[in-house]
Length: 492
Ligand SMILES: *Cc1c(COP(=O)(O)O)cnc(C)c1O
Image (cartoon, rainbow, N blue to C red; front, side, top):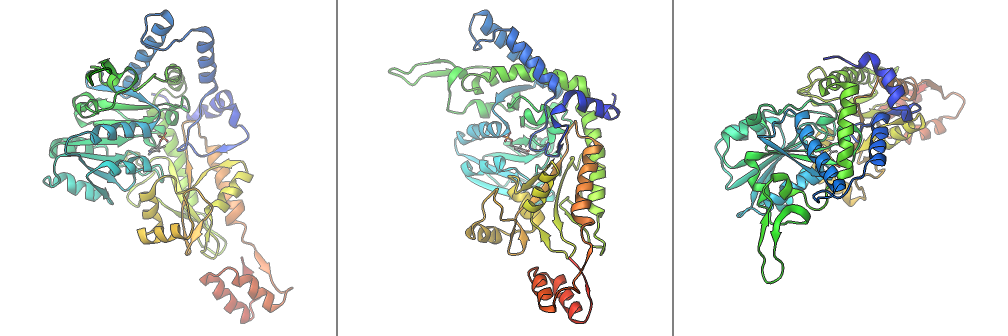
């Protein structure tokens, strides 16, 4: 194993020239593709003829051969033996999750669904077809549920993200094996989309593995826009029994006079509806090659990004104004630590306060960052449970905000004095300490050091108070008291 950290500047210059003028800190949204990948992909497509797979022509056979080759390599990337696992190509992680839901929806008697608070909306939506569902609010609730006797009837599906896309908190992967041993008729669905950007998933212990693992390859390799669902073969029945078929998923169909049809036997064949995104799958092969050449292994990416995240977190969480108050409120889980990759990935969620303690709107911070060519993410980040938890928003408050006009993705930063979303900084394989320094420097210049005392002696007392009253915080009210008592220096 070798670390690439010492070569990061060279890698950046050669492979990611297109970000030389920007500081890109949104790898949880999408990580970046190396130039070599795009060149090899273009070269391959412009020198070979790829036809629609599954015919006898050489162009079609070339596509089929590549698709099966890449399928095998993806399984190998995760140490998933083809004896125990299959890979289904899907559009993205959400499509993989939805494919699992399609199988469960068609189960006689329906299914019970349990999902973790940290779930992305893609997992939350699976509850809508369940006969009953439960959101687990704490890890301890999940653990208690695992170790207690079954109370729910019939088929059960438990889903959780390996890593929260909101604050990078990681959940125990051991739950899947424990659930298999302790609970009856219970399947596990792991949303690995955020985790795999920097995490190392090893499926060599197949009995401990989740039944279904959903992922988006663009979040691992930057390109192609393609997803995968890894299915544990011994648990595949529940998916292959789904009612729908389409495109190449059947051996034979009769449509005139009869509804008879026979599904394909291979798991992936019976689940890949319509023409595979075969050009994207060709690209995925090159993506894995180049990833291995640059970074050798996800373990190196994990170590590299963990070190950067730790530094960023430590500096942001201790950054202060001259009056001693903290600039950032960190939304890290108290039990997670950037020193331990099993509990925390390299994503940092936070809110910004002014020197008086009042919140500064997330959109204001993001706008200021954009002016410095820094790309971060702000908002609810498709993680309703995580946001409600870290911001302390009750369902009543959320509904009130909705009634007052707030919508996902809008600029209603603060409602009833509370933030509606967070700021998120996330790192990827090609992030560097220079990116982190740039962001820290931006925060210091824009906030921490930008609270110089202002001289109010030149303007009249009423104007002084009026300008201060605009900021309705407690601290400002204290300031007004101080001014009226004769203090002339105010910090704003
Ligand atoms: C990004 C993400 C998703 C959704 O991925 P898509 O590619 O949009 O389908 C789901 N879950 C998590 C944890 C994510 O980070």
